[in-house]
Image (cartoon, rainbow, N blue to C red; front, side):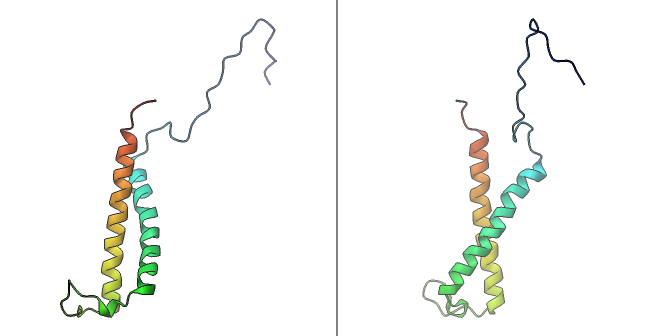
Length: 101
C-alpha cells in the first residue's frame, strides 16, 4: 500500500477512460450497424404483415405476386434489414465526421 501524499506533493488528475476512447474495429462497427438493424427489421416486418396480407401484394396494379407467404416474408425482411442498416451506416459515417465543438 502506498503512503498518502505529503502536503507539498501535488496530485495529478486522472482522466477517466471513456467508452469510445479506442477506435472500434471494423468488425465492431459492422455488428453495431447490423444487429440493431436486424432486430428492427423483424419488428417492422411484424408490424407491416399484421396489416398487409402477403398474398395480395402486387406491383403497381398488376396481378398479385405468385410467391409463397414465406418467400414474401423473407424478401421483405431482407429489404427492411438493408434499408435500416444503410440508414444506420450513414448515421455512423456522419457521426465520425462531426465537426469538433
